Amino acid sequence: MSAQTSLPVGAVFGLGRAGRIHFGNIASLRLARVKYVIDADPKAASVAAAAILGGQTDELPKFLLPEEEDQAMADPEVTFCVICSPTMTHETALRKCINSGKQMFCEKPIATSLESMKEVHKLAENKGLLLHCSFNRRYDPSFSLLRDRIPNTCGEVHTIRTCSRDNPYPSIEYLRTSGGIFHDCGVHDLDMACWLAGEWPSTVFATAARHNPQLKDFNDHDTAVIVVHGAQGMIASNNVCDRAVTSSTAAGVNSANIQYSFPQRYAEGYVNSMRSFLSRISGSDENAMIVTPIESLNVSTLADACEKSLETGAPVKFQPINTL
Image (cartoon, rainbow, N blue to C red):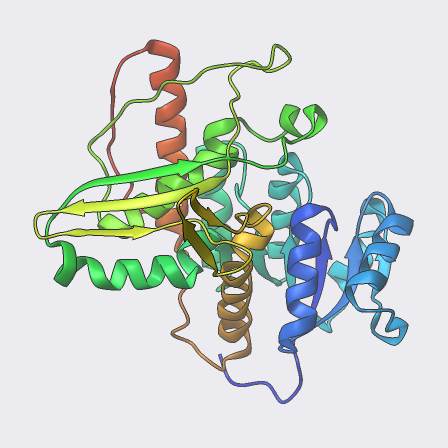
């Protein structure tokens, strides 16, 4: 892509929890501007957008209902879309974007089935469009440094351990449509572990507990710790605290609280992922790291394998996907 003389113009689908993060990052990065926001509650979305922009109403986008989204799709000025609407709407939104020739940044998953994911990726590829499924943990500076140090510090990787907790507890309404613990939360750990190891697993085994009687297979978490063990040493990426001050006295060790939730803990990862996407589509950095279709498909397939293992109580053989 050739460098553009003006900023790329985009549309954001959904200004919920993830949408507000991405909308804010686009505004702060100043590498693009949002012309439209498509949301089922335009009034609430406009209030949220105004708060994010600090009351700068001259920068507010136009707010559309989902049934009005064709206005954005038909606008030739719009070159990219950010999809962060509910999970079950991703595939339809992406197909519209592809038909309209828009570059795409999408929250996981691309679609709710592997075959649909493959088809959407193929359609985007055939039209020469970028479809970036954002697994933001690999864009986190701590994890990037950890990955860079593994070869010389650890040697051969023997164990990767992750501990995740989702705080605050998601609403039951959200969990009903989230796609399940493995596809909603576990995919981040699966992606990160495979990215750190530089390879895909051969076998998957999963088990889960249900403590909330309103849930079926969910025991939701948010990532807290990653530890990599190897032949030569160990590297750890621990929780980030609000303040880097620890006091040690006879009464014990006291440190600041860990950051409240994933938007705070992975704030830099979210920014870096969006920066990579915008740099790619603008042509300013054609080598910016992007999650490839094969990576996205394999992580989703691993989540499927986890569900199958949980259902059967047995390990599941994993065969990586190598082509679309």
